[in-house]
Amino acid sequence: MQEAEESFRRYAGDRLVALSRVAYLLTGDVHQAEDLVQATLEQVASRWERIVRGGDPDPYVRRVLYSQHVSAWRRHRGRVVPVAEPPEAPGSAAADHSGRVVLSLAVREALGRLSSRQRAVLVLRYFEDQTEARTAEILGLSVGTVKGYAREALARLREVAPELATAGEGS
Image 1 (cartoon, rainbow, N blue to C red):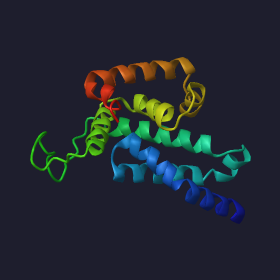
Image 2 (tube, one colour):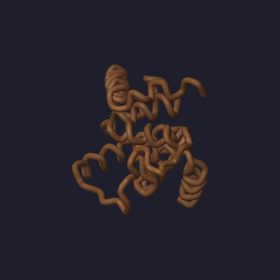
Image 3 (spheres, rainbow, N blue to C red):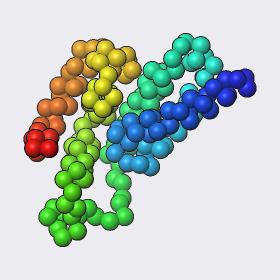
């Protein structure tokens, strides 16, 4: 028991930054990302001995993270979330003129317009550089479904943020 607990602590410490980064990409919010990682680690902690007996725990933990995200999205969709200050109007004097920050915000906003599954597929495929087969395995989907979600998500991104298509040019 003590060995499993130590193994879990070590794993959580080693993977916290990577899991948090992925969670942020999925949620678009630091606090929601922290909650997502915490819920994921809570869920896997109770099963840790069985998980590590199966080999590498990372695929299982990632699948739990993505499943938790989809479940949370379903629970909270349609709920209005108040913000402290309204967003700045485009072109205002307070706007940040850093191309990198503007691009980052555009990507975050565009990703926010995708379904949670589409977003999960894009994060796995293009941020984590996973194959279609690996993405399907992590999300518990078929490869064909992953391809469909990716195709739909990329089409949706081209529709809602056409400026991203040329964002990498000229860099």
